[in-house]
Amino acid sequence: MGFWTYAVRRLALMVLVIFGVTLITFLLTHVVPINPVLAYVGDHAPASVVAHMRQQLGLNAPLPVQYGIYIVNLLHGNLGISIANQLPVSYDLGLYLPATLELSSAAIVVAIVLGVVTGVLSAIFRDGWVDQVARILALSGVSLPVFFTALVLLGILYVHFGWLPGPGQLGPYTMPPPHITGMVVLDSLLSGDWPAFTDSLWHLVLPAFVLGWSSAGIIARMVRSSLLEVLGLDYIRTARAKGSPESRVILGHALRNALIPTITVIGLSYGSLLQGAVLTETIFAWPGIGRFATLSVTNVDVPAVLGVTLVAAVLYSVVNLIVDLLYAFLDPRISYV
Image (cartoon, rainbow, N blue to C red; front, side):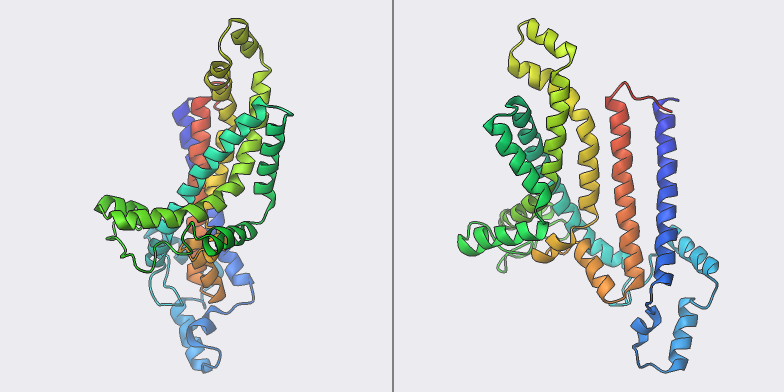
């Protein structure tokens, strides 16, 4: 099986996974003891109004028919109408998703830089004080709850010292840039709005670091273990025996191969971030899909919950597909079976 055949096969599996997610989430919305009709008309609506709304929403049809209608609507790009604001769910997702993409992308960059540097230093100075400090930092990033880290850093860096701005994407006195992509940093850069670019970049630092630190710990531990394994292989000993500088041996030979398994960890971390960090987005007042999902569940907004779940599943599946293809492309030992 060639690479492109393998890619098509993985793409087909991704479609099956997304189909399974739609089926499970659709069934769960009918199992939980929540009446979406009452969310529309209120708890004290007359029975005739409730019956009319059930008929209008198609809830009187059998479940297979309802699911078929749901799938047909999805194929036409129709995610339904939000109960909370009577707007298309796709419109709401278009407003909230860019903020999550912006925050998640910045967070994964922070995670890669911190994780790779910490893991390399930990492997080079194995069992030394540098290794111990690096391992403590990595363990704390994995162990500490995100909301605790966010609140502590907000209290220190924003409230006490005032070194970084507070919650939100922009300060109260900064005009938002023209809407191009929905990502404030990128929009301000594309429009040449430098005050908004600087302000939005500073507002991005703290939430991106909080999210990135939690993922950096996992990446650092993977880089350390992979690099230590590679450093014990024969070709590394051969390179050292030939008199190659230690920096070239580590960075030019060992690290390149040690990062291959780390790609999987980075991809899974990025996929998780793209699903929306609910606590981080809530603490930092970040208008992403994490906050949107929380509001949708609170308002019993079933179409919005289904839309968020579907988008999260698609994002996670696409990231996993890219990671699998990249892994197979970089590692010649992969067998396309």
